[in-house]
Length: 393
Image (cartoon, rainbow, N blue to C red; front, side):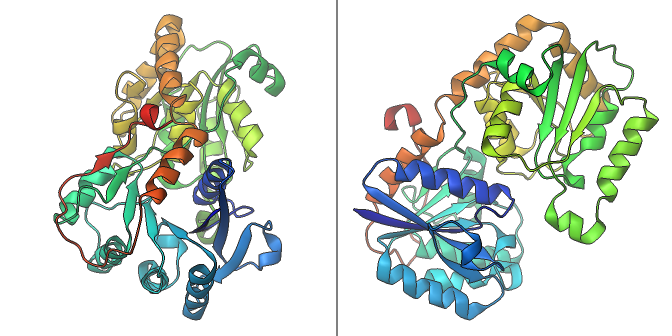
């Protein structure tokens, strides 16, 4: 029996990385030959998590990371680190390197953020993880390209491109709309933790003046905890004020919830258009965008890195940053042309069916099965290796 441990945030923590870890854990455990546990990074006690959480690292205590490394070395065959700079303690999350360097079992690191111009310290943290890891994963081709640019000596067999997994959808849009009370509506949706980087004011302004009968734009999600701590609900109040100013109350609906998996699947299944108006180009991964494509929604998105990678082959429409007029025209185009809408939905669904968590988890297990003793020096690195999920499934 193979024993794997994942280091990450984890539910009931409300963040995309926690959800990613839960879904990946469930997918990997389903093969019947793998036990997957979690070491959660949190300030909560272990009692607040489900029994699969073996240990809780106190984010800001270095000794807690060292203690976790001892547990991992004693009890597990493989370790996976979900890496985001902000979830670990120390400057730029430096404490995770102490843990990684203390491991004597194979390590796989998943990079959820890959910066084009990291600070010296951020680059050193990533380089240290690259040296210690037997494999590293980027969730998009652009991320692997950046890794190659930042670390030109990287071995082409170490970097894997594995797409973000998505739930299995039933694609019964009519039933989903009925259950949510939108059976008579054309539904556009944006979901995720709310903050100023999401560009929701551009989305709202793009609806001004449009003649869209029975149209609903659902903005679904709670305010991001970090935003809430620094400025409270001021951004949400600004958005609500903008909706009132533009007299869009009959079109824009705020759903102030962190959705359960089943709720999220229902909302995504119900939506016709998924709008992703992020205003920062350097976003290497978006779970919300991946889920929307997986649900078979017709996507309109600004051209941040992950969207540019994911929406190739007519899986969606890219609209320029800060260009309210073009965003408005694209929304009206899909609203008026049901044939074009159906085409983009078909292309999205066709791709999403190949990236379910069940299929993605098989790829991760294949990667782990090929890992051996720790690689301790960077050498001979050239290109990234990308998995074909159809062949791996």
